[in-house]
Image 1 (tube, rainbow, N blue to C red):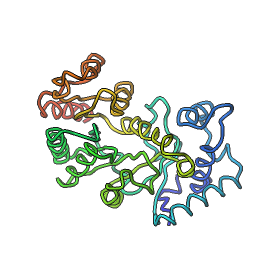
Image 2 (tube, helix red, strand yellow):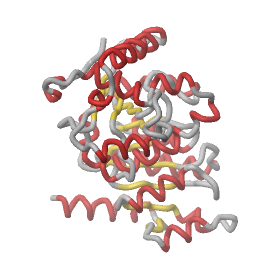
Image 3 (tube, rainbow, N blue to C red):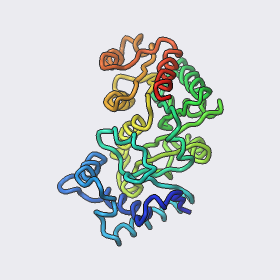
Image 4 (cartoon, rainbow, N blue to C red):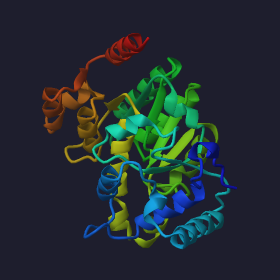
Length: 305
């Protein structure tokens, strides 16, 4: 079953058609350019009042939608929902990205995107034991204060953040770098299903294009989701990250989007890293005590109220 929970917002627009059109666009060159989030965003920037289906033949959109449903059925996914840019429930915060996504698949409680405070916790897939402890501490601290913990459901910091938030009765959002019906790494499959049922699972990844591309190309969807994750939140916390970590893509995005960027002190104390000092000069907040995070978050909440 496709659960398009707010079809009325689309008026005469068919959610099924928009899904199929989005998938079709990802399989076509845009002018002389290959399909990408950047090029699709530029297409819709040039045509701001258009829907995906305005660019796609009806029969092609219908065929792509049917193919997506067939893939989902084979993988046992019976219920999902979508959001299309231009619909009333598409988060306006996502428009702060340089190349905003046009379409999202999701499962779970969409209302979590509207919770008063949403904070991303991100970092390396191979944290130190101390990094693991810090991640769990921060996530639990935020969860108990009603902050929605957002991460990418990757191995390491991401997984620990999601689990700690859930364990302490909080809400969590997972923004994944695979299609909505797949889990990576597979060891996180049960956690992903739990988040989809009890919290919120979000994906911007086109199903059909992902199926046709090799892993060496599909891996680029992961940094793209970091940009979306930043736009969906008010702040990002980096627990641990290496000099070439993909986490730094989210760091750049957060500052560019006007979000707060917190970097734990332990990163500054690591003599092999240069990025913490570089991002501090750009406006990142150095976290010496966990309460530093709460101070800034509480200040933001007070301003909003």
